[in-house]
Length: 283
Image (tube, rainbow, N blue to C red; front, side, top):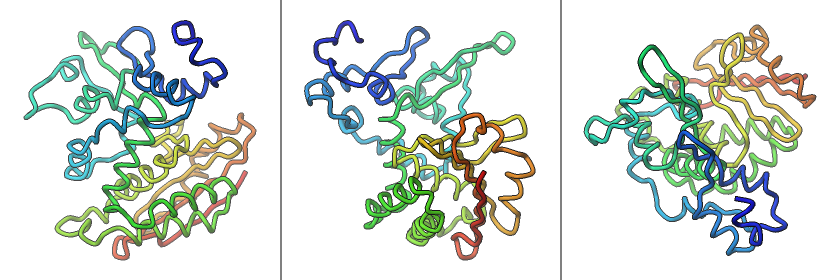
């Protein structure tokens, strides 16, 4: 890319360009999205979601809602060679649809017996931010104060304003439309609250990992910011979310980064459908 587009990319931060528009893999080299690069150069190095804005993935977003899909799972998808090549719309795997539509790409391939397996990932910041922004909008039913809430949350996270973070998340869940809970029991599932929080924070463009693997288990959600790490655990009911982080020492995975680490335990009440406990400590 640097060679073919060099005259047009002169002065651009190539690490940032890569973070935004690279990451597609078709079992050879990583590939940049050519449409994004052309628009990026034509717009004098303005970072925008060029490709994503060319069309709305309404069909996929509706499937996520209909299936109560666990959104953080998008970061830990493994499928077989047979599934990856399927085209029967009536039977096709949802994750394969995301791959064939360009919202997921291949991270690595490996063998299990005689089968070829593929680990998929969201390719770059453009797709991750845009897709989760649409999911967030769908979940909140176009929350009128969504932009303001996103801005306030981002500022609170940058400043480590823990009361501000708590209040923002409380406002988020208080604003969810009542019809989201009609004729279903999603309010009793930890995954629902994790999905909403994940989509909301990912829509801010914050580097985050859902179901973050450690040697002692999986962290529900990790935010890896420039100067801070947030390790978040969710519980529905009376379980002690903060204590689980401490007992399993999830924070050890990030201590070598020499950043401030905030461990956060969030409890939800299934009747109130909102935060019932918010505890945190710092290292």
